[in-house]
Image (cartoon, rainbow, N blue to C red; front, side, top):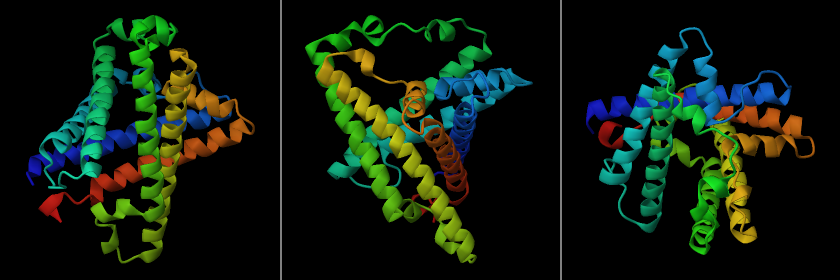
Length: 267
């Protein structure tokens, strides 16, 4: 595979790892009622913007996330690793497009914040989903929400299976480690991280399906609202703290991918 493309992918994994490290930290702070930044993708950019040299950090993060988006688009369209065209891979390639669009959107938000645009703050108002997207309240929109919820639930279940079966190790060079205790620790960290992310997807899927069945698009939860949902549940603070640790574990997994990921004939 093209070495420049591999480098782009590795930079992307590092940027994604940084995103989840920040989200995990913000979730932990929210669990103990410290800090004003809301956990979630938008909260990452708010956090970076408030740091010393925040504009530079925003630009660097946006560049890294753009690399990740490019890698996902190429994975989806060109299949550079020759994974084939089975139904499973077609579904996976579709999910790559969604991920690419998500992280490209986050990169655009970062650039807009860097440029001092008011468009970002304008788009973050508390207007309900039905008012912002009236199409979602139509029969077609509600049907699409239900389908999106089912697809998201399937993706979440796939993540649980991936974590349980350690499928993530197949595309990496982890097995080459001679220190078996360290390898076991790394695999455990990856499993915890993937499982934590799967729970977030599952809650989001539930909100989409609930919105479809109740004909109420306002039931759709943003990333920040997912964490609020966890916090408002019984033992919410403890669960939120565990989720924060899990997301930081997922960040570690992304960093490991940046180093050990095997790309096609690269391994």
